[in-house]
Each structure stands twice: as structure tokens, then as C-alpha cells.
Image (cartoon, rainbow, N blue to C red; front, side):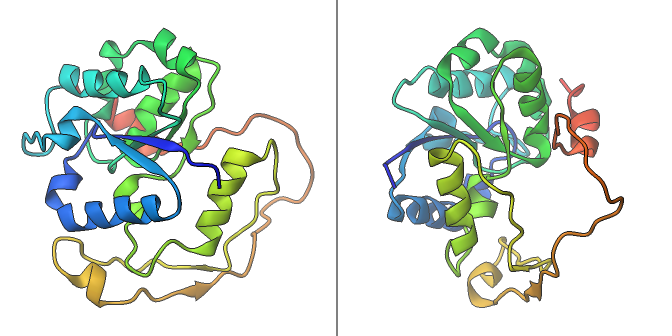
Length: 217
């Protein structure tokens, strides 16, 4: 895999401080498969204000500083959380569009992704926050590795379901995320609710977070 550079920022919760060991583990896992990590200033300096890292303006400045870094290919939050929507008035969407970066994230980050989708010609990728996605102690799954490869090196590909999935929560506030294994369920495949064919644009989002958080300044 060609080396890609990930810009890591904290537009919502300060999970890299709360779960520092898991954060460092997730970083290492990505580095081990060939990615380079560049941290935003709030992440690197461990700035912390309770449920968030800093003010909305400061968080937006961290994000935009990474956006303007021409060496960075991918923008990835440390996690979701609360209050990402408060960054929107301070973001420069012309610069974001010009950057042509791939913007990962989900949950609370939906507010930022929907704004990028609306105001630019970019297509954000719904999924992939650093800690929850890449901090699995059992390692990065072959399915996830294959998904990353498809996203970066193929113009189009078939959407395939994973062989297994897990709904088991492992507590990252304790050592449980390292000492206990997930319980996996075999995936029986896609569930067809209404059979037929249709064409159209599909927008994936966390509706609950999007509507409840975007107005919180």
C-alpha cells in the first residue's frame, strides 16, 4: 500500500486524553500498516476542557491547519462526541474543497461531513475515527484493511458485508478493551426489505447527532 498521511484532529471529545493508551495503540496500528500520522496542535499538546478539547474557534483552527497541510491525504477525528457542529461558522469551505482530502468520521462528526457535502464537491467517508475503529486490541481486521485499500486505490468497487460483526462493548476507561475478547456473530448477509432496482444518491449520516448537535454553539 502506498504510504498515505493522516491528519488527526479533535473536533469533539478529548478521547485521546481519556483513553490515551488506546489512542497510542490505534496510532501504532495505522503506522504499522504503512500510514503516517500528523497530529493537530490540540491533540499534540493535550489541550483539554472537560467534554471538549477547546473552544469552537480553536478546534476549527486545528482542523483548518491540517486541511492546509499539502502533505496530508486524509482527515480523521480521534473520536466523535459532542459539539462538532459548533465548528461550522469558523470553517473555510473553499480551502476544504481545494484540499481534495478524504474526510473520515461518523457519529457527532456527521455535522461537519454534511456541511462539506453541501458546500463542496467532495464526498466525505462515513466511518473511521481513530480510536474506536483502529484501537481494537485484536488488531485491524482483514475486512477493514481491504476496505481501506478499496477507498484509496480503486475508482469503484462492490460493497461487501463483513463475515462477522460484534455488538459487545469493551470498556476503554478500564483495561477491559485489552483483557477481554469481543463476542462475534456470523453475518447472514444483506436483508432485502423491498426487492427491486433504483438509482439515486445515497447519503449516510447519523440523523440523531446531526439534528441535535449542529445548533449547539
